[in-house]
Amino acid sequence: MNIRILADGEAVSRAAADCIAALVREKPDCRLGLATGSTPVGAYRNLADRVRAGELDLSRVTTFNLDEYQPMAEDNPASYRRFMRENLFDPAGIPLSRTHFPDGSTADENGTCREYDAAIRAAGGIDLQLLGVGRNGHIAFNEPGAALVAPTHLTPLTESTIRANARFFASSDEVPRSAVTMGMATIFAARRILLLIIGRDKHDALRRLYDDTVDPACPVTFLKLHPDVTVLADEAAYAD
Ligand code: F6R
Image (cartoon, rainbow, N blue to C red; front, side, top):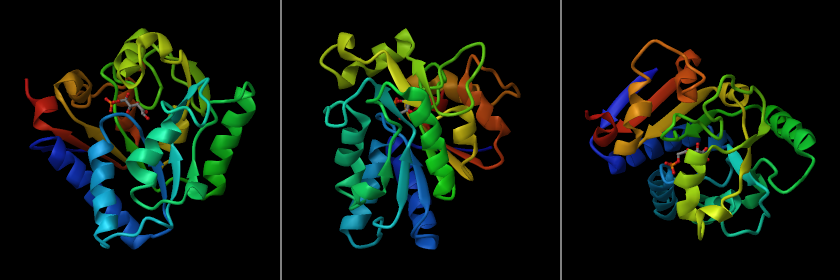
């Protein structure tokens, strides 16, 4: 695991965009695994700026997002699909036909979860998976627990995640109580992982990457087992 501490969130976003842009230049039809939330927004803005400036072409990438709330209609303004359209796909010229999400609308969770993992494999696997981390150490919606789940699956959200995500909804009552998420094995199948950690409230999660333990009560620690992980964190998350 290569951990780089950068001055601030802007520097983290720029370095993340550099890394994605370098991959896309080398492999224009690469598969990107993408995250939602506040953390990657600066990197997405940076990528969209490069596309607008004619420095980068993202029109041939294929994307797979980590997760989607359940239940969640595709056209709901709080859906992750909508978030990705607004923050990356539309401004960066990524055709929607090349974007994929776990299905948060259907009751047939098991079937669609298996299909999502199969679709990733059929596309050739994810070349680079972008991740944020929750305050409680979750990655995607793999929440702390006695055991973690390997494939894409339906999962209840913890109270702390519901509270943290209430800012994207009118009130915390409106936050869906479940999500469909890539599992640990789905994430681990990515060739490279780029984890972004920005802000003081992620301090504990970042610190857990410096000890030698792997702990299901802090899912991000499992990334120590992956052979190619880069962590870009800011001073605010690092400082004591
Ligand atoms: C989002 C996701 C989550 C977030 C995490 C951090 O697709 O998978 O694990 O990365 O909750 O969220 P922010 O970046 O809003 O602090």
